[in-house]
Length: 378
Image (tube, one colour):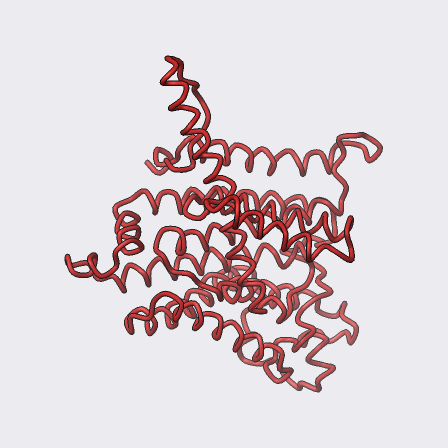
C-alpha cells in the first residue's frame, strides 16, 4: 500500500495541497467578486504556476536529496514538457491566428514555411501531445544519463555537464530554423481540449489538475524513497564506491531515477504552459535551473515536502518583492538566500524538524511529550 509510506509531515502537506486544489477554484467561481473571500481571476493561474514549480522542485529533490545527483540543467526537462504542450495548443488555434492559416502556426507563415515540419504531426491530438510530454524528457534524460552514469561522471563534473546541456538547448531553441518559434516561442493560445483557455472555469480546472499532479508526484516520490530502491539510492548518495563494491549496478539505479525525475519535471512544464500562456527558450536559461536547486536548498534537501515548500516560498517572495521593491527585489531575494545559507543550513523544514526534535527531548526530560507535530526526517 503506497499511502502507508507517507509520514505525518506528508499527510499535512497532502491535506493542504488537496484542500487548496478544491477550495481556491471554488472561491474563484462561486463566491461573488465583492466578497472578502473571493479569489481574483488573476490569482488562480499565478498560484497554479507555483504548484507547477513545487512539483518541479520535488523532482529535483528526488535525484539530489536522495541519490546525490546535483542537476543544474533540470529546467531542460521542464521546458521540453512545456514545449510539447505548447505545440498542441498552437495546433488548436487554426484559422483564428493572425494569418488565418488552418494548418501552419503564425510564426511559420511569417517565416515563409510552406508545409508543417514532420515533428509537428500528431500534435493536433491531445493524447499524442500528452505522450510526448512524457516521452521527450524521458528520452533526453535516458540518453544523457546513459553516457554520463556509465562513464562514471559524478559530482561537480556532472553538474557542469547538465549546465552545458541546458545551455546548448537554449541556443538551439532560439534559432528560427528549428521550427519551434525561435526567441518568441509559443503564445496566443486559444483552446485546450475544446475549452476556452482564458475562461475562469478552464483556469480553475487547470489549477485543480496542478494540485492533483503535485499530490500525486509527492506520493510517488515518497513511495520510491521509502522503498528498497530508495534505500539503495541513499546508499549511492552516501557511499557510491562502497555500494558498487557490494554488487549494486549503481549506474542503472541512477539512470532509472534520473529518467523518472525528468518525466515529473516534464509534466510540471506541461501544466505550466497553459496557465502562464507562453513558453519560449528563456525557460532553458541556465540561471533558471540554478534557481530551481536553490528552491530545494531553501526548503530542505532530502525532505520532498521541504522542496515543495521552498519553491512556494521563493516564488511567492519573488512576486511580492517585485511589487513592493521593484528596484531592490533582486537584492532582497539574494539576501533571503544568504540568510538561509548562513542560518538555516538544513533549509526551512529541516530546521523546524531539528527544533521540534530538541523540544521533544526537553519535554521528555520534564516527563511530558507533545504529540501530533510532523517530523521531516521521518
